[in-house]
Length: 131
Ligand SMILES: [Fe+2]
Ligand SMILES: [Fe+2]
Image 1 (cartoon, protein in one colour):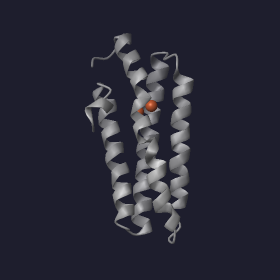
Image 2: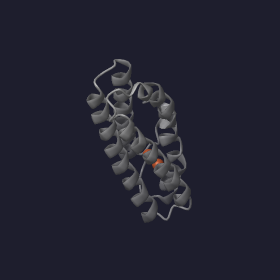
Image 3: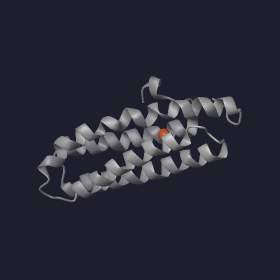
Image 4: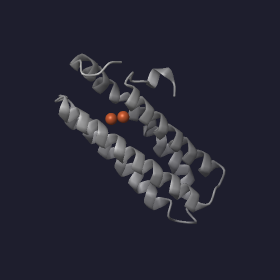
């Protein structure tokens, strides 16, 4: 993961890294024209990782009374909706459209980390965690 995308909070960064790796595996599987079920399995894995990761962040936001938590959660919900849609789309064995759309829909990836920066800064200012 590029240094610019690190929040400085190890646990969050480790989760982001795993999410990035699985997202790349999805794109690789699509460009290698892997079987639809391989792609679907990876998208399901990505969805589960994101669901867990967002739950961790949302719990953290509640613990520290993060002031922008509603806005932050809305971004999480939008991303989950996108992946949920991909999960369904990859179930179509003849889904030629899936490949083209996937790369476009993965444009959300940098946002996963970008929007966490404010949260990371707040966590550090809160003093409960070290960078
Ligand atoms: Fe995150
Ligand atoms: Fe987040």
